[in-house]
Length: 317
Image 1: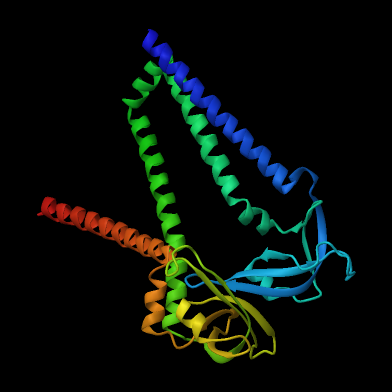
Image 2: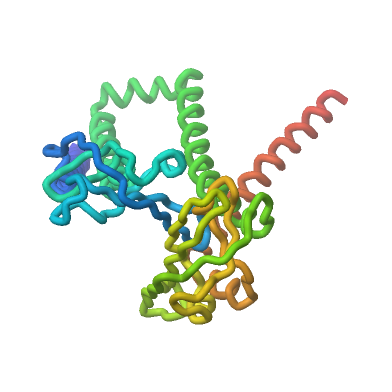
């Protein structure tokens, strides 16, 4: 009896810890993003740009102005995230909807991307608190007997089976999402179909050297060029250390871009040294691991399906 009471007190202590953590994260989230005072706002687009990494498709941004071009405009020049569809449809001078606070102007994508760690922490802490509450409830004998009997029925087994499959599908979906994005970028790099080759002017260089000089340091060029349709394109492109040291500001960099999306560009003349540079990135190792998991899942289900097929043939024969 004392042992069970001690377990329940321990559960309650952990519940309080996770609840306090959840509330603290929610409070910080609301305070940092000032969500309670956010108001719907319409801003004027004064510039468009994109950021393209080494391994994934680009992220799209606009610069906005809330005060009609006045020099003292506090929001002018901030980068705000937008979708690929918005990037195609919106032009400089168009209006974009978002939310303004005392600090800045944000789009819905800004809220989602910038607060992803807050939302993840709130979700994890909240789910742990709920799981522990459920564990405390199960310590009650009447409830424990009910779920024990329920677990022995076919309905309960079917329910747990469905829950397990849902979790498996969710995990596979996450792996597929990041793996396919990496593979899609790699495919467009290796097979330049429906792409246009040109030269881009390097207007800026930026390097962020980590304590491990040859691993996870960031090297970027700001590139500008004109597409076939006459649109002026500006992209902040991540490059390898070898390429970064090879070119200087105001030099021309040979590139190719996808005709369907000129912001999705690729540096031409990738060498063996560039490939070795890319393989030192933790990000590359992560995508390689995801691909191994993806192929492992595919092989597992292939073997499982083949085994069932062979068993069916043996039974029929």
